[in-house]
Length: 86
Image (cartoon, rainbow, N blue to C red; front, side, top):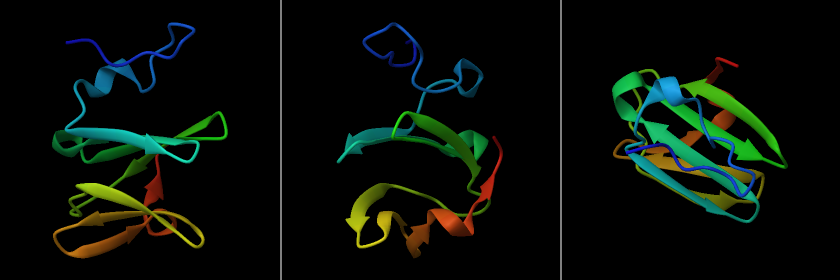
């Protein structure tokens, strides 16, 4: 299965990451979790960033007062606590 593409036909995340284990979007934010590669790709306001999730498992997202809050079995995972890859 190919990664999702935008209306312009561009991939929403780097193809080398393969198939996302979870993805979604809300309030102008799109995200894809790549559990096997320990990566999270977030697109907000037309800008995309890839994060290293390390040992944290992410399985959901909710809108917090300061932006998106990703969640997992161990609780909340704030984006600013993750290392940006690109």
